[in-house]
Image (cartoon, rainbow over all chains, first blue to last red; front, side, top):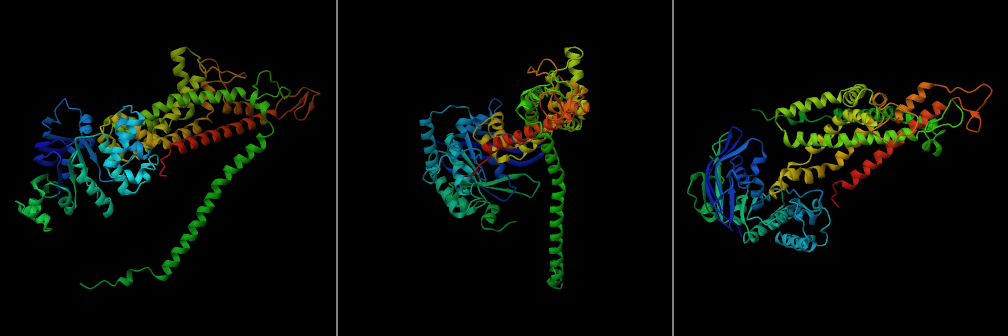
Length: 259
Length: 319
């Protein structure tokens, strides 16, 4: 089952640069939450703070709280590595491990954590994850072939399979379709709809139709200009955001009028 | 504002023709440069094979230089030098490969923007400029200080060679690690894999073929070193299998010794000619030098072959 995330007074900094200013939001369990907004508004940054991935950038740090089912991800005794086992992530560009077969890619999360896995358990896990990522029928006859031999859309679904195979509570997706063609995009979008039964999903997208199609809740981020911190403008049901937004900023953005 | 006259900016017929001529000229120049570069290579190979083949046989490979006097039988061989080269080079590898790779991992994965990064980087550059004779003297003096004056054995030679190998391995490994995409590291982190394991299982694994090539290049560079080994490992005419005790001859030192002694002396009245009982071969030292050089070249070729094979087995495949 998915878990709920509460973000309280979250400020993100890259070194001295204040990237995101005072974000407060609730991400509901087993729902799809979409982050939209112009480039540089901090939506990807906020997404990456939800599993502490932003920390891989030197100098990045946060102030405020991110609670996963009430547990603070930034508490001093919380291990960022453990956080990422509960909050998985799919990236903009498909990034299967080039040295691994399709099967080994799916098992990577388990094996790289030095867990031994019996062959029958591994078979079950591979089939479960690949079926979950709607890729099983495409690849079941060539599981031992390299993952990077697949098409872009298949690679992205392989990455989703790899992420769900460690069975996180939350799945973060950072523009997962922006490098894909429309048919692959459709496949991934359908998949997102199915995955929300098991996971809480947060997706960053530049494509507003996509946000409207796949998400239950939408958060709109904006920035006053480059060099200024991004902030959360409003967050509401996707239908409300797209039909009756509270803020004029949101209205202008979704209707294509800026400034 | 006038509409720009775009025809003025378009390439003319004559400029297109000029481009084609330049293209042809450059093509010819590049082929010529290639030939010029290949001539010395082919010449070296040809000369070594032609001169080396006369004494390159099983007897030569399986005998050392004990009891070899002048140009008379026994004619001697390079077993001791081949053993020395293999053991000393292996010793140098054992020291410098882990050190070099771990240094590169620290530089690329851990020390970004730290002061230590610049310091280490600077000293690696300094190290790669150390003349090989200085490395030999350094190893000799260090072991003399620790294990008593005049300590000369194969391992001192390994230490000297590793000083020459480490910077090459660090630089090539650094290069290979830094071209592993950040995406792969992030993918591993996002699966809850700790950084150390991500480096070992993903980054080093992906860069492995390149790292192997770099190591082979570093070996090829030091396997022909003469001066430092002359000081650190000395030379001896019998076969010494113990890397840690006693002098050890290597192939380049052997070649140097043979060449430097010149023509062999033949007893008055002995028959001159090629190998046969009681026949004295005056030019035998040069023959041995060439044959040893040939063995050295073959050794490097074999190493290269092994390196390529390893790189191919671990290469990233898409099919």
